[in-house]
Image 1 (cartoon, rainbow over the protein chains, first blue to last red):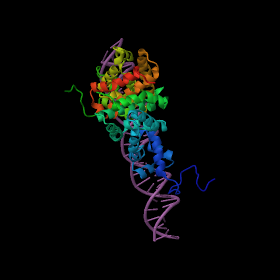
Image 2: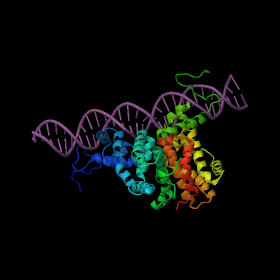
Image 3: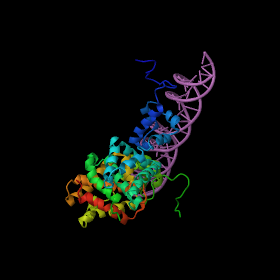
Image 4: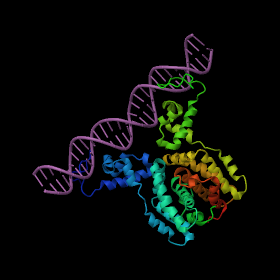
Length: 204
Length: 204
DNA sequence: GACTCATTTCATCACGCGTTGAAAAAAGGT
DNA sequence: ACCTTTTTTCAACGCGTGATGAAATGAGTC
């Protein structure tokens, strides 16, 4: 059962067997812990413990807690170009519907953890808010609106963002019922028309 | 400019002159610091410093940091009955508009700090999310929807909440432009019709 | 004016944090 | 086999946190 490993006391030092990759283990653990603790709430020691390694590995591999955070959480979860294409692929009057389906699809997949992590990180890390601004508004929503050719692209993009963010907050963070448990079809019927108005309707 | 106060060194101990109320000073300072630091980010020392008293006063007057938080932040900012009345006072087809005006009015008044504090507190304090659930959905929005006599009151109330929260997040937390700086009239024209649809429109 | 007691500051506690440097152990090259 | 390099654990540092108990001080009461 043991090959000179499996001690209860101090772990053996030195380089491990080739198969194990502590860097990846740390990244994975960091995503989990940052998700449900936020940046300040998550401790380096907790992350290292979940990864099954020593806390000093964080500094060795990522320089600092911030470095790990940047690598683990601040990477874009999905290629924005692909997402924009997917949202634009189909009749323009159904873009609102596709937005609801895609975002709920992406965020439901992680039980809302991804979104909750985003919100937590925003509130504790100003840098994250800036990254989000860039990604959400300019890379994603503004390009979407521009493709549709409506005026006031920036305002429409941010209006869009307000309903999408609101959807995320109520569904994944504060979890108001029946909103939080409503199926996708209900969400689409209720929200898509409002998004569509922000996209192509009369807002002045 | 001074009346035997204003020393640079150690402060004088003992009971202060009758006019000063350190309890109130602490509450006021706590609101400010909790607002832009969140529960975990705010330190007892920082709050006490802003109040101009010793950190030990927090424990003396409120038992603990949590006790202070409960007294300072978890109180309802406005009487819900008054708010509901104000929102219902007028033509039913303009309720959406009054919602936008009132919430922006309330939140803009503190530069968004009140709302930002709420969001920060939600993410760091599960207890706050529960209080918000009660206040926002049941005390406020559901009663509103019921008065209007539409079916699916709960769903409509939470849909309403999603757009209102989204408005707050984009305007006060992530500060997407031009949304964050748009004047009330622009907000009303853009958002009120969507709220109105959630309230009285067809969502099935 | 003396006594009492609530109020306030100060000094300090134990704890947990992120980080660091050294030592140990394995891998890789020659 | 030896030496170098990389990886890993360990022990500890300095700092800041929330909390505590004692001493100091002045307001209120008789």
